[in-house]
Length: 70
Image (cartoon, rainbow, N blue to C red; front, side):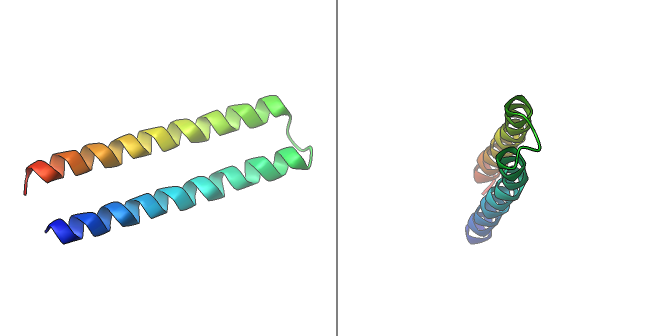
């Protein structure tokens, strides 16, 4: 059971990191090409960072809760 939890944490973290990468890539490219202003890029980046923080907190809470039930 512990082995599958570690695999789940690794896969969740990799999924989260790939989602952040593909979430921030269009923002950076749009800013570099002048499609959006720096204020808009900051707002979009802050939204992405908020989602990232909530996702990491959720993964940590689930892992902490599941480690008590082994």
